[in-house]
Length: 138
Image (cartoon, rainbow, N blue to C red):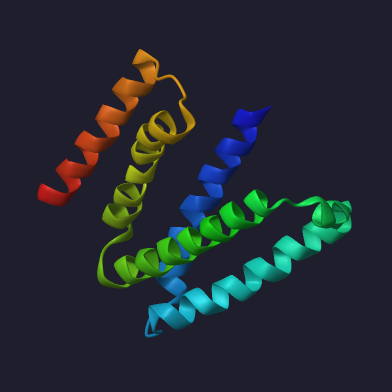
């Protein structure tokens, strides 16, 4: 079941690039990011409230808070740089380079989460890195 959510994530991530490129024509990318963030806040809180997920709010630990805040900061910076790249570059180049995050996540998960790397994951990461270099240098 997890892979269905991952595929849906990929579909919507692709739509983000297309919608953002069209929507931010003539708009400062930081303003575009701010507008997008408000929409995400409304959507995320609506889903959490509708599902009753907010009941777990009081059980969050200090570690939960620290790493959720760090994740939020990383997300915000990722969006800001992504929108700036989309403003300056072509979606067909920016979006695939952005997906270098997949290979980086694999590497960082080994270092910090002690996840094991299979040969398939290693080959996939190497191919992503190679494709990214091809797009940048080609």
